[in-house]
Image (tube, rainbow, N blue to C red; front, side, top):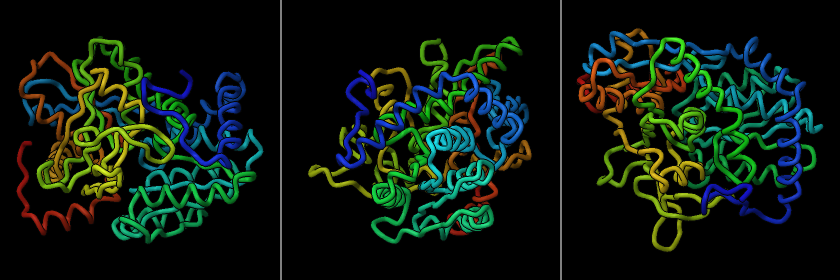
Length: 395
């Protein structure tokens, strides 16, 4: 069924939003097949964003872990420092084709907000970005970048003051300005057609991985990506769902699942409705959304993209967790061994690669999608290490 991934997905929104979503769905299905749209997007991704991104054999990291060889898909090298630009360029170009002049977006870690501001500046659109005040405090650099790029950044002080609440405010703004404004949703979440559309724009990651692995005459044994809302992961996995590769999504384990301070939606959540979609949600027995925690702002979300929920139930992807400590340790190990400072979100995936590599053969390959760079997280990691000790060991 269109807009569904098994029992998940759908469109659970106020009637006032249905015409806008239908307009967006029609435009997306039209332009995704149009040669001139595809040509312009490909040109922007190449000449503006910097695609294709390298697939880097992290030999030193592999030696540190022992066992399988670890390859990093370097989305951190894109303009703006993260995979988010793949989606924002696609949606902003689509919005311009639809005649929309204004863009509203939400952001958690700030990378989607920065990528939105960049795409809008490039394509001549005005942008407003909602961001939780808690996330603004821990991601000051990205707030400054958004302002410099011409975006109006609106703080959100309701609820947990994080990504969930920023999405709520962005949707409210869109409701009030739906005729002139496109909501540029940053992850593979929300009502149809957003999960499918974001996956479409992010699937360039998986296509490049497949091509690059063929070039070095290797098949990946395992492919690992971090999962919050899940856009970089679904873009990575989509090309490999029906292959022999083991697909592993890594959620934010925070202080550990028993602590109750985590964002492991697929690991601990249940089926529910959030932000216009049916999906796994962290909620109590009465359906109230639960609190979340992660050292990484971009994974601090109580839901997940509906396609991930379907992939979990179908057994096509294995969803695991990495704790704050494991993510920070992986952050430091990658920085020390390879001279690459990863985003804390991506560090969760690196932690899982370090965990599984020793049990695998040296001839096997693990591909990790390094979804973003860690400039934004240096202060957070420094503060975390001050408060938790400076140990750095293999996870």
